[in-house]
Amino acid sequence: MPVPKNEAAWLVKAGSPLELGDAPFPTAGPGELVIRNAAIAINPLDCHMQDSGVFVQQWPAIFGCDIAGEVYEVGKNVERFKGGDRVIGHAINLTSGRPQDGAFALYTVIPADKAAILPDEISFTDGVVVPFALEAAVCALSLEEPGVAMPGVASPALGLPYPSLHDVTSSGKTLVVYGGSSSVGSMTIQIATAAGIHVIAISGAHNFDFSKRCGAARVFDHKDTSLAGKVIEAVREKGSEFIGIFDAIATPETYANDITILEQLDGGHLACVHPPPLTTDLPANVNAGMIFAVNDVVTPVWKDYVTPALQSGKLQCLPPPFIVGKGLEHIQSALEKSKAGISATKLVVEL
Ligand SMILES: NC(=O)c1ccc[n+]([C@@H]2O[C@H](COP(=O)([O-])OP(=O)(O)OC[C@H]3O[C@@H](n4cnc5c(N)ncnc54)[C@H](OP(=O)(O)O)[C@@H]3O)[C@@H](O)[C@H]2O)c1
Image (cartoon, rainbow, N blue to C red; front, top):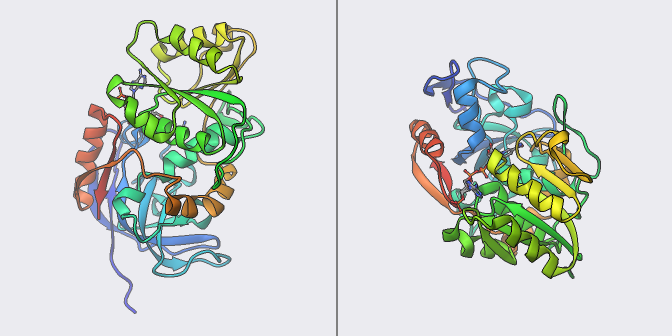
């Protein structure tokens, strides 16, 4: 059978627009899959990579983290997938640096351990919103021991249970999720509540219903000038063990509120999507860290949870996709839309 042609949206140098061009046709190594992509999603990380070249290890580069499509080739030692399966998966060019591991191409290599069958009734454009956010959520919640997120910055270790396919009784624990309408924050709400955690979210006022749909018990407006006080009161009212805060926004403004909340609630975890405040700026008894969303801690969730949870509706494809266009040529405008800012949506390009 003739090998199909691969094409990609290449980053030739930092700060330049993506350029469409031919790409080598990838092959699946042991434990890997080659996917014929039907949809890819955009993440803020992609914009940072394009603008500054951060994390790029090989030039020219193909990057991008989220894919949905059909299995084209199955590598050795892979038992869960066969050719033609519809899947979603997390592409890990971020850590491998290999262009064939970037999402912004017609064909991408992914580790089979970061893929799951997409139920037939879910479209590729819906399913593709899940992978990177899922990986980030599980990294935020379930690491048992702190690792290294980047040199000198520890990853958080909340040690919380994995999400369950069954209705679990309350764990007796409360977590605050700052950024409850963002892609990573809303997925963390879904995963935490499926593990029996009581979640109090902080979102835009127009996204309260959205955060509740993801599972948040209470939601507060990030623009409310009394935000920290209201969150503290809600945690106290619940009366269960306060785990801490997952800050999916991680700006000086959110850190100021995190610090007030943690101070008043006698400390806890502060898991952030960017490097946390300096220890000297934090109250006592705070374990702060930054997540790094490529980690084997997520493997059991990919293997045992994602497909049945999507099937049962326990895992929802949220935030909903906004389809920017069809074809690799639309990735550049999707990146520009992402930089301009989005609210409770995920930018998706069909291929
Ligand atoms: N370290 C890692 O491994 C890792 C992994 C993934 C992502 N990240 C980082 O995590 C961040 C979030 O990524 P994402 O894809 O989830 O972003 P996103 O979906 O693009 O974020 C958009 C959302 O941010 C919310 N937001 C903005 N300012 C806010 C504030 N002050 N308080 C509460 N919510 C606020 C908006 O809420 P409203 O519209 O409701 O106002 C909007 O819905 C990015 O900086 C990304 O680079 C890091």
